[in-house]
Image (cartoon, rainbow, N blue to C red; front, side, top):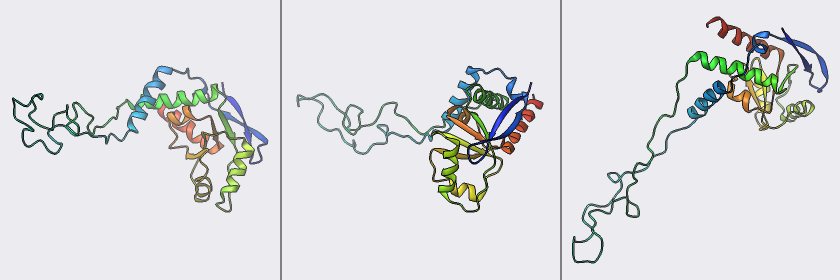
Length: 214
């Protein structure tokens, strides 16, 4: 069964309705799959450039700091020891890749489930395309205000146009993305996602295409 969604114009007024394919609405959300894919996505965002020095890499320690006996102090063979200040680090972090490889089909399913979650939580809103003659931030901000866009929102368009990108790049509360680059993590973390009808068709095509490859 297809679902009808209301469309808002640039003035924040209802201007019509669009139908959403049942390829998304018929899915049953699986929290386990979403958790696995989001965890893998966040792991992939880690730089993994952290590094500490072992006792073999710190400077100093070329000679025994004092004789073995007769000083009243504990025996020591090197100032590079982890027990010493500025000594080496035991089992410290080293550069590594945190990436977690997941099956492509699982990622595709997670994206579909995230879209369904948008519908379930009433966080998906269809809006008319925005056309700007000038790349003015205040024009874009005025439209977002009419839509009552909360912070941490996404505006998903079919194609990123230069004027649109330049007008929206200084607005940190709403992120402008293309329908092809939207992922499951974006859908789950956004407080509200605004789609143009064209972007919605692109997403439906992505869902249908992934379903055909199962």
